[in-house]
Image (cartoon, rainbow, N blue to C red; front, side):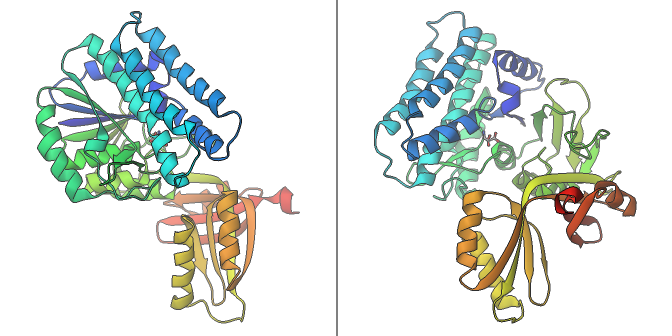
Length: 424
Ligand code: ASP
């Protein structure tokens, strides 16, 4: 049993669907489960639709029409026969959103978000399964919501592993014996039968859930890059592909923000010792990166850049120490506001963190923190994490920068910084 995961970029248009189908068809061996994201940037567009609906904006229907048009254009290119049942199937799926946006938004926004945004994955998988079905027999569309069970934390569903594993082994494994199944990443289901999502970019995680529960032989993530690189080509001219990577380094890189793999992906597959292959869907036969229980560490220093960060420092109003009691209170506030910490450092009377900028989150967090603490912050700062750093690598990334905070462990250095000219 192998698991293939295809992200939005691989299925962004009709050509993409054809390319993915040919990769699937080239798969030799029998059992295969395909996990797919929404097409292209459709999740962003569905988020836009959700916001427009929640805010009662006039352009709700216009945004929705654009989403429909995008998918029907792809369908028209893939299926010359417009009587193919997929046209009705997709149209009927969109009707679910039509019904929802007819009503005034009365339910909780996160719940509404999940009901709308999850449609992207439902439709992409229906289209891929239908197209693949024109090329070969035994293709089954599988609704991931029958298998991935979560609690009701909308937008960040917490997986109920026991129930999920039992369901997958009992009802999905037998089906995979004679079929290639196409299912959704990113989505799950509550015990009351409502759709949840697992957090943005969560399809890798879904693939890892299926891999672990099926005791897969391997999992492959098909990307638009040649594998895991030691830096993002967006920020670095010279990057190197890392052919072999340990689970440990992979989880560290993903945790610090290397976008090539979702951070939650590694644990389930490491726990079952399942190899994870990162391959290019543009060059399917080329080598990529193999992530395994390798004992060697990364052959080269790796750099992870995160821009648009906030650096926030907290000081007790009465000059008292930052001790465990304060820290547990501060952490509970971060948790309540869903702030995910990228770096942290404490001194006697201050505690600093950096996290991804989000205007609303920042405002509400500061309002809460200010009740008990003095708060200072900078926006528009950058965070660079260097795994296996040395002075030369630090010098390289801090040219023309003012360092605002630096945290080092034995293998990892994190620097929060901003351009010199801005501050001088
Ligand atoms: N479609 C979702 C997103 O864009 C999940 C994923 O692609 O991994 O966040």
